Image (tube, rainbow, N blue to C red; front, top):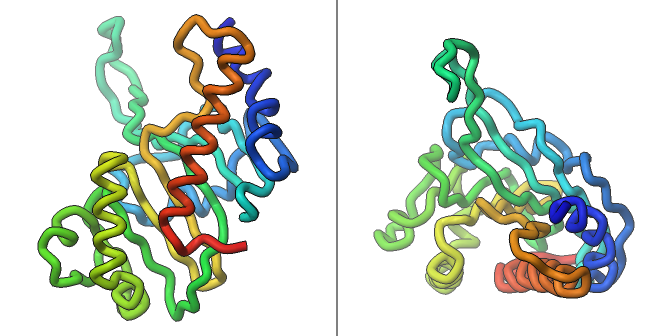
Length: 218
């Protein structure tokens, strides 16, 4: 019942907090290519079949679309009933936001907390031990990662935890992934208005993260 209420009230919270809500679909997702790009995710077989809570609209002046998603691994093993069969395990859950960045790029690259990806090092041991950069050449990534911007990402990571993954695309698309984020959870006994305000706060927190990245544009 609580989850049903959250589903019903999610569009209300989005409409109140966003500049404009163009779409909300319980079981839709952003383009799959943005959910499966190389972010150093744990090994997985496929996307999980879970509600996406997809939304599209304008947030603080930025066109955005976002959804929840999961990645699963499958292998033969014993399930909770001690039966040997194909067992599905979730290896990653999070929120994916697709927006626009203001950079001029010659190649795509990623900056991620999730695991090793092939790419350059910045030479800053603190940053290189906290984040992984995925790129072929790396010039564009290193141009963005000035000492000041490295510090910005480190400070953001210190506040949020190891949740952040960024995918920069040559066409101006920016994919922001936040591990274990769920905007529309309802775990407590809350009234409808309390739940709407709670969800508005989560959307506001998302907007704050995008703003602090300092690269999101309309």
